Image (cartoon, rainbow, N blue to C red; front, side):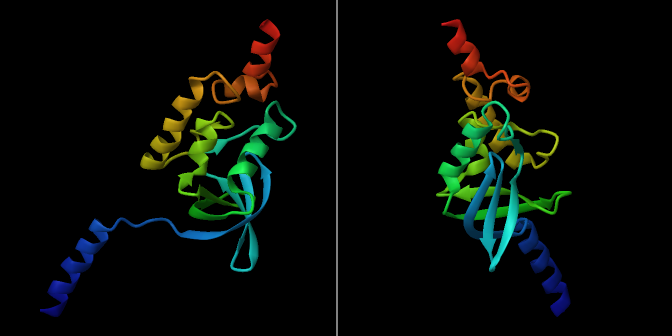
Length: 164
């Protein structure tokens, strides 16, 4: 009798409380570029790649600005990492939350990164990040509108400045 009650109760709890990926928090000790940080967690430094986005490398067009934008959002702050995977370089890949905002989506919304659709698999999380992407396109600034142009070093802001 006891097991007949326990199983439905356990099943109900699991269905009502969705299983989440492992989440943890720590202090950001380094911002590597526009989509990677290092977080002090349990006395160890852990490299974290922001989930679902891609930003230009430091030496590419807008790479330094993307780095500075991410630095302004997270440097020295305690952030929450919603662990999604581990990449081939051994880094944690996760959604990063700082001051109540999802940093991944904010980087896209402000135009310093774009949605990395190939690796952004989660339904709700993808919609959050992509909602940032659509807003980033509107102002025609930074890298959000054209990832391809930024990747080859032609940023729209630079093009707009030359045509004025």
